[in-house]
Structures are given as structure tokens and as C-alpha cells.
Length: 141
Image (cartoon, one colour):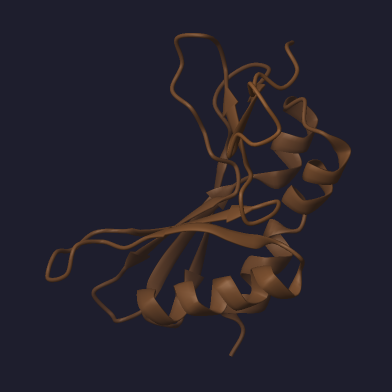
């Protein structure tokens, strides 16, 4: 497996190889609206030392998902691939989809699976391992 492929320390997306198939995903039900869920996820992530790398909102008036991409700092987020032709994966990305009942679904990478299958720097693996705690904290009433 190759190490980081980033061309310099200034690259925002540091690419790493992922052994085997694409990362597994986890899902949690949020009792809050998508917008409130994203806000709560951002706050929980900041409390755990992660930065908000990007927040991609669904187009207004359309039924779609919001994406919250966390970073190991404000300018870096890990990128994983299963091979040179494979699509990239953002293990610190959380998808928040609104539900008809005004709640929302949160989807995120299975941290334990990724830590076992991806060659990540130790400090990134530690931050990735906190994602389930961040989600749980954000979804509590």
C-alpha cells in the first residue's frame, strides 16, 4: 500500500490507499431536522478537536442530502481509494438526509472498519475513531 500521495504539505486532500473494498457505512436516526442535525454535528466535531473542512447543502426547495466534511484541521481531510481507477472516499464526510417526519438520517464511515483497513497516520486514525461518539453526542436531546 502506498503512503500519502499529496504533492506537498499544503494539499488539502491527502490521499491514502484503502485495502480491499470500499468502506462500510453506518447510519443513525436524528430526531432533529437536517439543518439542526448539521449544526449539532459541527458543534460536536469542534468539541472533539476536528475542524469543518466543508459543508455542502442541498439546493433549497429540493429534497436532497447535506454533506458535512470534517477535517483533521481546517485545511486537511483524508481521501481514500481502493485503487488507481476507484472513486475517492472521504472518511470524515457525514451525509445528512431529511426525512418526511421532520427528522433526518445521518450516514458516516464505519470508523472501526476504516482504522483496520486504511493506512492512515496514527493521529488521523484516532480522530476518525471519534466519529461515532461525535454523532451520538450530536443526536442526543
